[in-house]
Length: 219
Image (cartoon, rainbow, N blue to C red):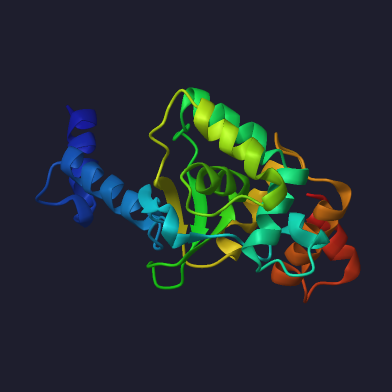
């Protein structure tokens, strides 16, 4: 009897538990702990795929692959580069026979979310589609071969808009370019890689020491 009385007394001795069941107190304490651990900064919003007319999409003059061009803002020069060095003509053949694969959106930049949009990732696809749908004329020396590709295409309904993910700034997608074109499936040549790494260093690591820059770029 004395032991039972002592146990009952110890259960009510703590004033913080007076007047409320122990189980209810535990639930409230756990809820308070979870709240204190919840993040104060909301998670970033996911981008939504938007279908944008190709007429509103422009090539990226800062693309590392365009280092060979005297004027990377010149559309004719960019198209010739895509055809001569980047296999855009083979991509045109594929789209003409199988259709455009919409599962990998272009990555584009627009400061205010409206046209025009600069295509940071997907310039080769943009060139192929613009040549197929007739939005831009082929270079004179390629006029016959590209005309033949369009004539022989099994799918005549060429795209006039493309799926895109829209970002506010080029730096928002800059690291992804390295994943795709340095260690990924569409590898750049050595000079394109070097130009990209120089841009990455200038954008993100310009204030770091040389040793820290090298370590960051290596990762």
